[in-house]
Image (cartoon, rainbow over all chains, first blue to last red; front, side, top):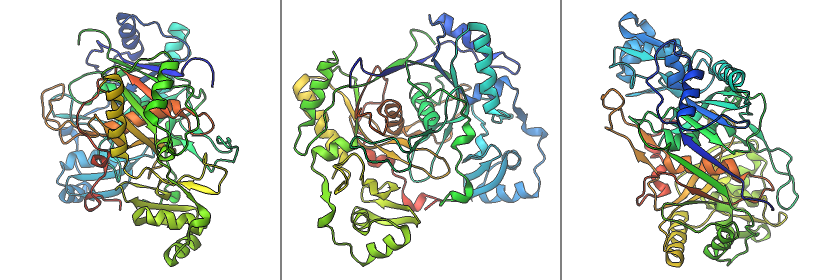
Length: 255
Length: 255
């Protein structure tokens, strides 16, 4: 063990405006970085709340345009949720995992398991529209990474984060639903431990750790800190995808 | 949104020696801080890998002293695990959650759900002993916090972290199994969102976010970085306990 302490710093960028459909996120993020005195560097990580990606992509759905089908009506009766919201949840999902009063957990079309398919009725526009997750968050992350590289020359990693609850434990945590420029899952198989024995299979949900670190600063309520810059992190560069973090349902003892 | 960007820095303290039973962790941590040029400050957070707490507390069990009972023999037959290790897992657990080939998930006596009751056979002493989790990690965290305050005058928060897998998602993440000086669970109920509507029930697993942020630096293999200093984090001070993060089994749809 030599040299300085490995370290990273996470900064919540101030001054990100409310995002509107069609807004160019690279422009907005670069302006916020400049206003805070930062110049993007190779090796920086930007963690972006999925909500602003969705807004920029125009993923709003006015509820008055949604006709709930029979399946949605049935699920709404069980859960007590708005049938139009349930209709959208089902359209965004492959299957229902659990339903109960006030609870609707599904396997999202993107492969993860979450409440309400990530559909957000808060912080939107007063409740007449809801906001779906980005169409393809891994692609959105890659697009953002490429645009930032083209404009600044810096090679960075992007994590698009969402907030998930979880079985067994109370409290939401950050998860990665889009990744670019970073391995999402770090495979430690076969690395020796301190005594030289082989480790058993050990993988770190690295991009989820990054999302959770960012959530320490971004808050969930009226704090409006949707972009976190992480500098100095010795992250595993590579072509990861958030989908790498999804467990195969056939290998999951809790489905 | 005014003022500088909210930010925190996480440092992996170099030079933590291999911990032996009876070692005084406050002395060792203060020496490592001093060697790295840090003086503990009010508001610092120290994230400590549970493994070194267990070692200092002498939680080793030589496997040759363990007589597996009938229940352990039966579970060992299903899982293919060492019956002596299974015996220790069952002694440390309230109940079995799932068992399958190579998999044994239990509800730990401390209330969380995890693989193998957190019993560690790596990084121990070549395999003849295993290491149990600390007897009472919340109490260990409080003890460490008090000792550090007595010796330095600084009021800090302590998180004792462990590594958990999870349903649905691949890759381990950090979780808090001991907490002192910080709310483990942050309740955002009723805080307004950006448009002033009431949020639905929203709680953050704050101490778990802290543990995951620290895991970005501590690694799991031969890196030997069991103590992470987090400075600048605007954490919720208070009398939290890791047990606050355990979901009541009766309210868990995935038990």
